[in-house]
Amino acid sequence: MRLQNVEFFLLFLFLFKYSNALRDTCPIGCKCDEDIQQVTCEGQQVVTLPDRLPSGYEILIIRNSSVRTIEKNSFRKMEKLVQIEFENNPNLGTVEKLAFKGLKKIRLIKFTGCPGLTELQKNAFSGIQNQVGLKIVFEKTPIHRIEGHTFRNAQNIRELTISGEELALSRHCFANINQLDFLTVSGVVLIEPEIFTNSTRFHVVHFKNSQFDIPPQTFSSLSHTSHLLIEHSKVPSIAPDAFSGLTTIQVIELHACQLGTISARAFANVENLGELKILRNTIGDLDTSESIMSKALKTRMEENTLECNCGMKWMTSVEEMSDINFCSTTASFRSIRSFVKAKCLHNTSQKTQRKSNHLPSISGVSRGFSPSILLISITILLRFRDFRI
Ligand SMILES: *[C@@H]1O[C@H](CO)[C@@H](O)[C@H](O)[C@H]1NC(C)=O
Ligand SMILES: *[C@@H]1O[C@H](CO)[C@@H](O)[C@H](O)[C@H]1NC(C)=O
Ligand SMILES: *[C@@H]1O[C@H](CO)[C@@H](O)[C@H](O)[C@H]1NC(C)=O
Image 1 (tube, protein in one colour):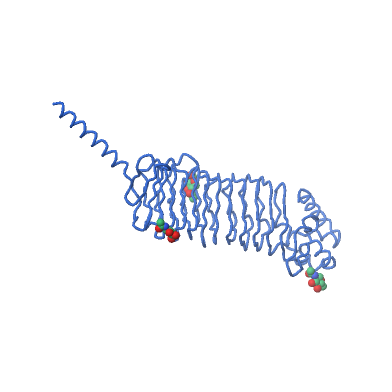
Image 2: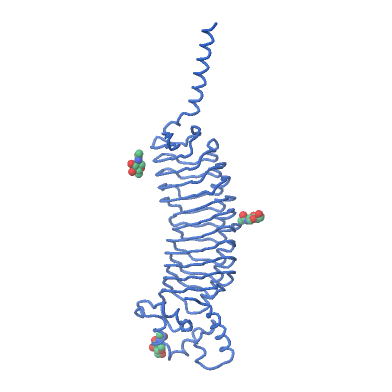
């Protein structure tokens, strides 16, 4: 009788341990490092994602695998996951809609070296329901297109960094994102209209190493953005009203870009703009003062290189500005002020004719004292009074 009890107990213990062990086995093809609570699934023989992880593990690395698709709901049994990284997965080509659904604890989703992942499709990053700030990062992964609503209803995104290649940003690609602190995108070649629809709470928006035209109203939903930075990019044209709709913005900055034409009224209609910075760019066509007119409290236009012509005489009315912006090689890099002094003082009639359909430039004063031109000129001078260089 006693013996039987002991045997029964041992059997029970065995079963208990065995079932626990089953639940806690490391998935096939993966290594589980208990110290850092990390599961690493590595090598070509890994063709699918694990469907569950031993309890307590928070980090999942998929490296050098043959995984092709991240399916819908892939992580539904891994609600403890804090971090997922896909590293060097040459076959990965698809992230299905709702792929990361329900990862309430997630803080980082990162793709590095996934050359086959070229498109991000609708709702791929929807339904995550993260409770803390989440970073989503794409590196060395040549995204060509982000479809509309890829991040629909995403919330509390701390950082979204996309290093694309020949990247087309489709209409509504960043639409309906509830909060995004830092957006950084590079490799852009096309921005369709309305990419930010219904996304108001973006804090910093940063484009770099890109080449795109800025159509009208591009940023029109971003009513809470504090800093918009475009740098090291080629921007052939900036449309009128390109920046309209930004209603509370500390800084708009164009830095180290090759700018083509900045339309008159490009920065018009930006409300509550703290500072407009146009620094170290090369600028093709900027011969009307209206191109940089804005309601900014402060405008810094410095160290830009321009194709000089006498139409820039308006700039000499803001002495500092014409001292610290320079002509291109054709005028031997001299300052705009010295160019105007040397070349344009006797060319007034020629110049004013050419620009007559724009706002008359300051030099109109020297042409004669037509009261209306004088009035407009004074208005411009008053405007520029607020420039701090
Ligand atoms: C993973 O792939 C990278 C790049 O192809 C290679 O350098 C590395 O040796 C691979 N690692 C393993 C463990 O196979
Ligand atoms: C923007 O939000 C409104 C109201 O929720 C909705 O009706 C509309 O479809 C959304 N627009 C887009 C492009 O998602
Ligand atoms: C000024 O006018 C002269 C003669 O009309 C012309 O040769 C010269 O190119 C003009 N200068 C500029 C900078 O337009």
